[in-house]
Amino acid sequence: MTAPQEDAPRSRGDLAITVIGHDRPGIVASVSEALAGLGANLTDSTMTRLRGHFTWTLVCNGPGAAEVEAALDPLAAGGRLLATVREVRAGGEAAWAGEPYLMSVHGADRLGIVAAVTRVLAEASGNITDLTTRLTGPLYVLVAEVDLPPGTADAVAKRLAEVAAGLDVEVTFRPTETDVL
Image (cartoon, rainbow, N blue to C red; front, side, top):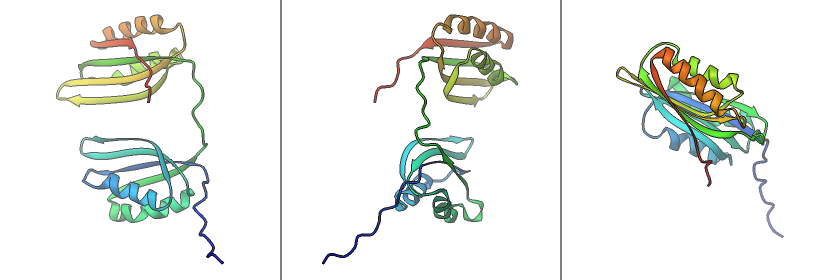
C-alpha cells in the first residue's frame, strides 16, 4: 500500500500584489521565495526603483489572499516593506482591437504634464498600457505605450502637438510593433 499523497495547493484565482519599501538587495528574492513556498505561480510583474524606493506590482495564481498575506507578513515586519494582496478576476485581459503607439514627452519640469497629455489619450478612448516618468535635473521625461482605437491616431497626434506647444515640451508619437514572445 502506498502512502497517501499530500494535496498540492489548490488554485483559488489570481492575486494582485504590491510591495513597496526602501530599496535594498534581496527584496525580489525574498518575496518570490515566499510566494514559491506557497505554490504561487508568478505570471506578470513590473518592478522599479523610484528615488530610492522599491516598487513591485505582480500578479500570481495559487493560494488564497490570506495565505499570501501571512507569508509576506514577516518581510513587512518593523515597517521594512508594505505588501498588499488583492484578489482579481482571472483572465482579466480583454481582447483589444487597438493600434499600438509609443508616446514620449520631454521638456522642462512643470506641473500638469502627465495630466494634460494623458487627458488627450483618454478623450480618444486610448488605453495606456505602460507609463514611465523620470525627473533628471530640470528635464522631465515621460514614455508611454498606448493602444488607440483604429483610425484615431492622426487626430490624437494633432491634439498632442497642440497640448505640447502650450506646455512648452516636445512630444513624439509613433506606431509601434506589438511584442512577440
